[in-house]
Amino acid sequence: MLVTTKEMFEKAYNGKYAIGAFNVNNMEIIQGITEAASELKSPVILQVSKGAREYANHTYLVKLVEAAVKLYPDIPIALHLDHGDSFELCKSCIDGGFTSVMIDKSSASFEENVEVTKKVVEYAHAHGVVVEAELGTLAGIEDEVKVEEGKQSYTDPNMVEEFVTKTKCDSLAIAIGTSHGAYKFKPGTKPQLRFDILEEVSKRIPGFPIVLHGASSVPQEFVKMVNEYGGNMPDAIGVPEDQLRHAAELSVCKINIDSDIRLAMTGNIRKYFAEHPDHFDPRQYLKPARAAVKAMVAHKIKDVLGSDNKI
Ligand code: G3H
Ligand code: 13P
Ligand code: ZN
Image (tube, rainbow, N blue to C red; front, side):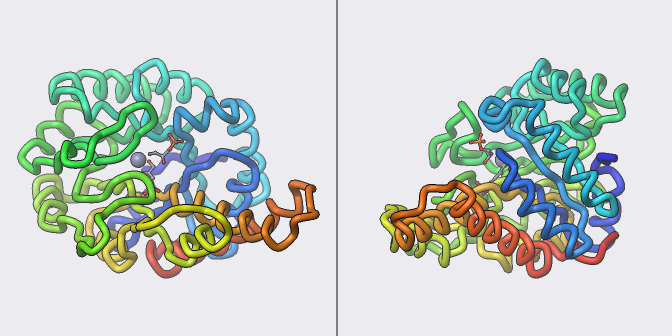
């Protein structure tokens, strides 16, 4: 059975660790993530964006996730909608078997954010589904919404209590300096998350699970691999893993990772193509890509999130 994130977050908050929320788009990604989670006895969140749903089809993704649940009945797996942008999209995922949805109205006014989030929460809770909301905006691309660098806004701790009380959401994504994608910080600058904001938020809503988006660390081994084998990703920089570890020890219960999966697969597929120009069977190059996703996720679980041996 798929589970919600309720119990996962309670345990993570009290145990000072975080649950990895990994974006899934196809079978190999789901396999890599769940094989790692199963071997390490870690709860895991598989999340689907609007774009992933358009790419792979809702039913395919739900059925692939159900296959993972069947293969690994011992580990708690939640199926989550990432960056839902409307009540209708959230409703469709709630009706279609998801156990958690995000409604992201962070780019709208506070009032509109409250109004839409509240509506999603009422529908979700009536159907046993939990809701993540967002206050503050991250730079980078969230599906169709592109927030220009410099236009992002950190979460205002003064707003969180009112927001959470009014909407009754179950977790809250906040903006403390992370951003989506592989170019999170300017080269030559020191990446630094705003832990002062995180701590201030937690003081206002003690015990409430916080979510960190844009939390890929952009491992330089994959960037190097991409660039060495014909790619062009200069100055790709992510969030330092020690800062993610620190966030997990505080009130952050969910850490979102997508770009690192993309890099692991792309780096390894580029390498494979370069080394085997005569191969043309997709299984041949998807195999090392899947293995790289598994190894990367295992590293995150053990060394960054701390969610291993928690079931
Ligand atoms: O937050 C964005 C995630 O990385 C999903 O990206 O909308 O391209 O699937 P996507
Ligand atoms: P990254 O681009 O840092 O992997 O962030 C993913 C994310 O926040 C998905 O919602
Ligand atoms: Zn995100």
